Amino acid sequence: MATTLNSSMISASNPSIDYSKLVLPDRISGRLYCDHAIFNEELERIWYHEWIYVAHESEVPEAGDYVTRQIGLQPVIVSRDEDGTVHLMLNRCTHRGNTVCQSERGNSHAFRCAYHGWTFNNRGDLAGVPYSAGYGESFKREDYPLTRVPRYESYRGLIFASMSSTGPSLLERLGNARRLIDQFMDLSPEGEIIVRSGVLRHEFRGNWKMAIENSVDGYHPNILHHAAMVMAANGKADIDTLFGERSDARARDLGNGAAQLDLTPVQIKNGGRVVPPGWSKQAFDEYRAALTARHGTERADRIIAEGPPHFCIFPNLIFILNQMRVIQPLSVDHTVVSYYPTLLKGAPEELNRRRLSETYLIHGPAGRVAPDDIEAYERNQAGFQAQVNEWLVLRRGLDREEQEDNGQIAGHETDETTQRALWRHYRTLMTQ
Amino acid sequence: MMKDSAQPIMLANEFAAVAISRDDTGNGPRLLIRDLRTGRVTLLDPLELAALTWVRHEELAPFLDPSRFTGPGGANGTG
Image (tube, rainbow over all chains, first blue to last red; front, side, top):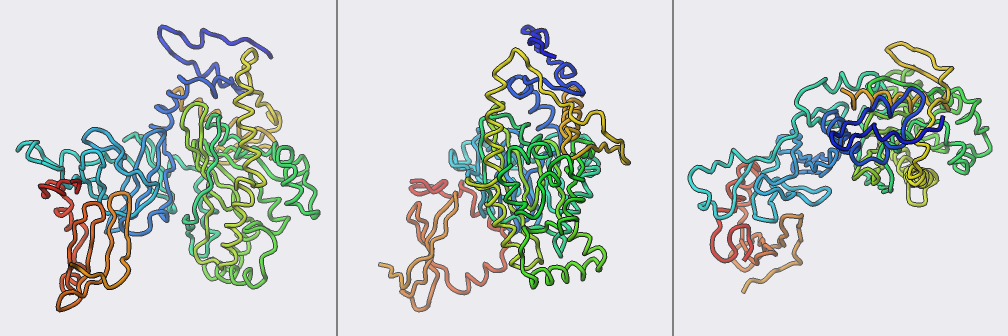
């Protein structure tokens, strides 16, 4: 139903945004993607409160390794000390606030601020300052370490952090997503992925939430990615059975802001999806043998048949095929999405090589899929400037959802069950 | 005048850049380390180098304290 913007939603004298009026069961307001005040509130209530994915442990494997990332807009350093412990600290000199590390990744057991030379070890302790006599006897180096991120935990190598020192634990928050993380990691004969193959980055003029919505959108692939789907089907499958009405796949709300496109029925039918079809029998046999040694024949064959899970963990982490996607908001209408190919520890070299090439085939600058999505996001942001009718319709499949165990809700793969799941979680976080 | 007997190996990160090479100007070989930012040079003999293999990185922290350096080329190495 068309309606005009209701300016009473945001009062000029006492700004207070009523999210229960912007996020409804079957529709949401376009203002959620455009409003700077909403973006700032999202920073406080989501990015600086919830568990946010930061990096994978394999990105800092050696003593002295570090990477720099952001949690929301806050710059952080992820470092590994000489005893193997990972540290997360704010990338902000405790002197006068410069970022200390500029490189995206490096190896150094100490960090020196370029501005005034304050020097910290990679645990964050202040090692010293130039001309220290000027600070007098009362100056204590231990009073000025780089600020630690309040909480950080790792699950299967995935490092999550929270800027809030209280709240549910990471495992509590992961909930039903945990078993899908296990499914992704257990594709490796050693139960570990390796994230050291570089990254593809797409930057777009659009709101960050579009990227996570899109990741579990089973409605658009046959349309927006039609050419890619036809190529992927390669004359062997009807694309309507992959991402159409005749697909057996399901869209699932896993709870707690995790959502899934359960492509297992399709992947089993099409012979698994560990890598793109066409790998050599030798590599397959070697991989199967390695999985069997770890899990036994039955489970190994099931792992291969089911392939990788396809799911997201609100607000910023997505698993699709062999890649991890990480969403980085820069402002209300400016976002960067990083696509990390992941390799499987203990898998044959041919398998990992195919996983890597699939990433740039699909997500590279001339990739078959990612550029389409980026174009769609920017057209979305442009469309939202039309404000007379502010609503986005999210009612697809509302009448055919099913309640499942563990609080999950499932719908057809093409239904907006997953988008509704994300927005329900969003409203919970923004109204708590 | 020091004579470098081989092409130096460059090691750089965002915080420092050094060139290291073998030096044979003394009665025995030493490792020459040149700080490319300040021009300062040090020469370490094999025993000193072997000792370094026992040193933990945290034990190097006092050497990273910029307050120990004074004068031209002092502090954080800027002239």
